[in-house]
Length: 237
Image (cartoon, rainbow, N blue to C red; front, side, top):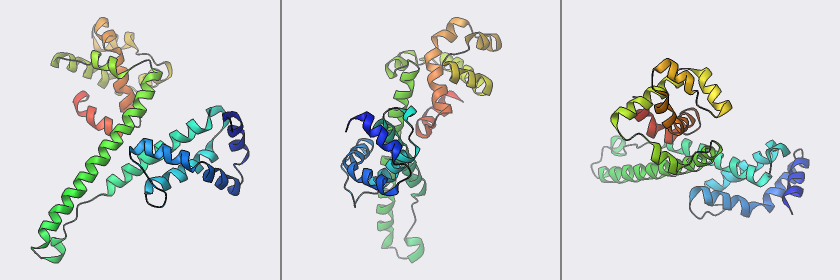
């Protein structure tokens, strides 16, 4: 089936649960491939919760798809990826280390408690790294829409403490003005004249910082929880 006929099929089956289930069954290999790409590991139906999330997300994609969103499979892949990120965040939030010995009072359990704590801590760290990797993948695609690459950001990132302070001042000024943030989002342009007028920072300095500032604004105002946690203390201090 070509992309066009699949798009039409999805459009026409929204009201039929039986047809939706039939399409899901046909595209189980595609769903598994999306989940494996997002998790970075092999998964099996009936064993991995991530595949259940993928199936639910694929059904959601069918029900929310419209032809103006382009190719259905590309749309479905993004929905699956977003739902997996939501799932991993929730799982990480509810992973708590509970002391067994505090309930039993047995010293023998203390070693087991430490082992479990270390295992959960390792699991949480791996999940956070996985989430950050997924967010960076999404961020790379969004930055491309602004004609910004990670390679460019490495080159324009502030090197000295003085430059970092200047860039931080610009970012804090913009973040305190929602109207300017809205303007940036709509036009994909930095309001250089406005910043120069109100911050007294030289125009050339602002122009040099343009892509770096835009990238940070995208992160701070976007759905990038783990990348945000990494950069916020540095740029907003």
